[in-house]
Image (cartoon, rainbow, N blue to C red):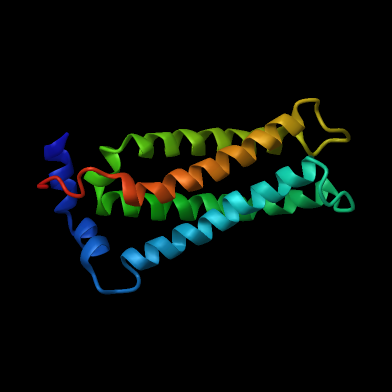
Length: 160
C-alpha cells in the first residue's frame, strides 16, 4: 500500500490541505470536523440523554427536528475527515487506532439510525435505553480515539 500512500500524498489536494498557509486548508478542515462532530455526536448524545430520562419535560417527538442537523453534521464530518485523511494517509492508515475510531463511529451511527427508526413512537422500545447508553459510549470513545491519533502514529508520510 505504500505506493498508493505516496501517490495520494503527492496529489494536489493532499498537498494543499497539508501545506497551504490558508486557514481554509488544514486548520479549516479541523474546524469543520469539530463543528460536524458537535452537530452529529452532540445532538445525538442529547437525544440519547433524553431517552435515558434527562430533561423529561422535553418531548422526544420534538427532537425529531434535529435529524436534518445530524445529517448535515455527518456530511461535514465525512468531507472534513476524508480531507484530513488525504492530507496524511500514511499517518492514519498505518495506525490501528484509526480503524478502532472508524468502528466506533459505525457503531454510534448504527445507534443513531436505530433511534431514528424506533424511538419516536408512542412508547420507548425495551432496548432504547441500552442503545442510547451504548451510543454515548461509542461517540465519546470515537472522539477520544480520534484525538489520540495525533500522538500515536509511527509513520507520518510514506517516505519516513
